[in-house]
Amino acid sequence: MTPLPASQEDDIPAGLARVPTLVDPGVSRAKVQRDLDAWDMQRDVYRARGWVLLDVHNGLVVDVAMFSRLEGTTPGPVPTVPVCVRIDYRNYDLWAPSVTFIDPLTRSPAPPPVRAFNATPSGPRDVLLDAHPTSGRPFLCLPGVREYHEHPQHSGDYWLLHRSQGTGSLLVLCERLWRLMARSLVGVSLELVVLKPPMGGQFTLRLVQGDPDAPPRRQSAGARTAAVVRFPRRRRPTPTPGTETRSGPGSRPVRMGGQRPRQASEQPSKLLSINPVVIRGRGVSTLPRPTSGLLAAVRTFVVPADVLATTLDTLAQAGRHHAEAFVVWGGTVDGDVLRFTSAIVPAQTAHRTDDGLLVSVDGHALFEVNRALYGRGEVLGGQVHSHPTDAYHSETDDHFPLATTLGALSVVVPDFARHGTGGLKRWAFYRLAGQDLWNPLTADERVELLP
Image (cartoon, rainbow, N blue to C red; front, side, top):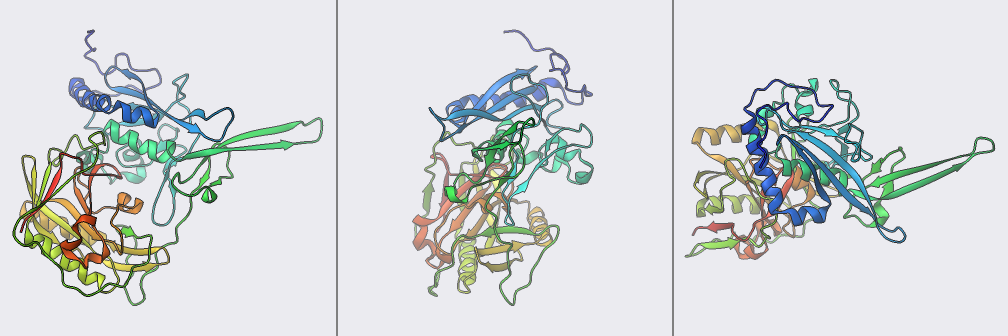
């Protein structure tokens, strides 16, 4: 095996600027190699998604391409490469990784043929900006990407505040790129303009993006060359009459349901009786899972009866007013066990909209929660919220959690929690595996509800 060069600048692809060495290259390489090993363990999953590892330069710079298929063509689907990036891990993880879009053939910097639409409660937001003030190149305006943190408008959102969440890891970055830019590719738009002689004509091909899970009738092509997309937009939340609207910087929408709530009976919460109840995960082991951070090693979540009782009473009380509610859990980690020791109900405002229900928690309330947990020596390791009917993690739930530590637990309780633990089989349990990525518990993960 040929040893890697000691310098982080040797064998670096042309076009990358030289940077000062602030972190031992061996340390950065070891962290990158850990992600490459995790990729190899799940290579079948990523291959099925169209992810291709093109090159690894000096153990620090990784080239990745993502393929998609254009369906409905003859004689069959046409493969295309909507995303090809060069991820620079020099000085990682003192620095965030740099993401440069490149041409898959020449490997030189080139703008991508698609956009990066991030779903928000008020509609999709394009997080691919066309020109960074330093490089002049397109960049992803997302935390965890060096270009984001080096942008003058984000000077206060330091990378070190996000580092422990794993946002810079190779698999998390690829997951975000795939969801925002590759998976959203739904078709192709052809436009032919015929002009009078001698001007001839013009032929334009556009890649079309949209919501891949929406019915075809909801997809529409953008009116801009090279891949503009219109996602189905959602209406802005309208507060329930008589409630206070909280908005502005720091306001965080928690969830917007897709259905109107059913009438809820006012039955008291049913709690556990004698023996602890163990909920075991059913997710496949190949799902992405946290590989670093405080909660990465956790496999068992223990919920004492008083924590559960406070949570269910809060959810049920809100449900009697046809509203959803949110509770966060704090606890301590001992090896592979996270034991929750407190349930905190942050100040929150319930809203009812044409699209469903919404709970908002403002920035000050979140600050108070974190300050209280810090004073107790606890970590915010779990969140619980209610749904009017079925329990599931919606796209909005994915994007706007209150528990943001990698590996945190998210529990969704159906039917406004009016059945207490009597409806436990219909509860949903997820873990945060990366930015905006919540996966069901795997077979070696479990939740213990103590009597």
